[in-house]
Length: 111
Image 1 (cartoon, rainbow, N blue to C red):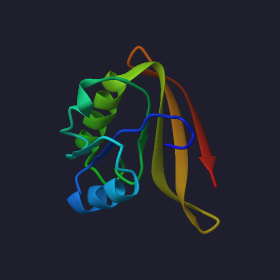
Image 2: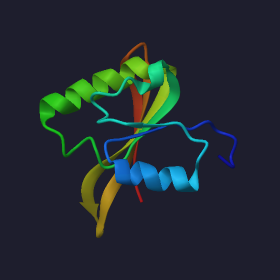
Image 3: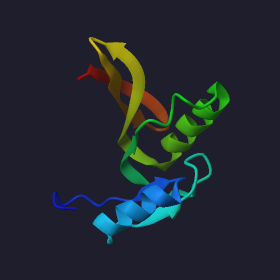
């Protein structure tokens, strides 16, 4: 990517991944539900989850949050969106720091 970060992409939609590959052919991709992904067999300094977490059943949310805590490096960041309506805006960004598999702090910001 232009900013110098390394990016990996996981999505259960082959159509969305195909479009991503056309635009960014060097990004490794995996067609899999996030709950079932092996996350490329590695750990990350950050993970981003857009529009996925809150439509899941509560037990799936807990399982996904646990899995993300396993693939984040110590002090890794997890950015996710949560549906909320504030002043006509329906998305809120939440950032969590994970320390030893537990959420250490979080920042919630509505744009």
